Picture (cartoon, rainbow, N blue to C red):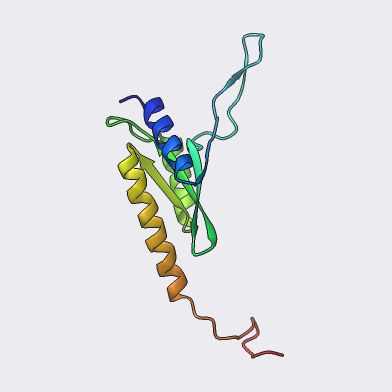
Length: 129
């Protein structure tokens, strides 16, 4: 299946399911004189989705690939940058994979929230000054 069809199908599914999903157009734009305006960022994912977990909007970055598609070096660098700070980045090849990714995000975020301790202490380590 072509990546464009996978992208359209998954984005349609997400929107119909109530998610805020945006395709990120990151292709060179013709300027009319034979030159092109460069892309905004090399390796930028194809789409961004907000997954709301317990009232918190969570950013999820999506790169669409067909069965044989692989990440470019720039895409790998962006993926690593996003994952470095605990962000979510997925390579998606089908609606089923997108559904699994959403479940993984929800599970991971709930685990992170559960592990946080709210003791009432401020940054200085003293309670309610």
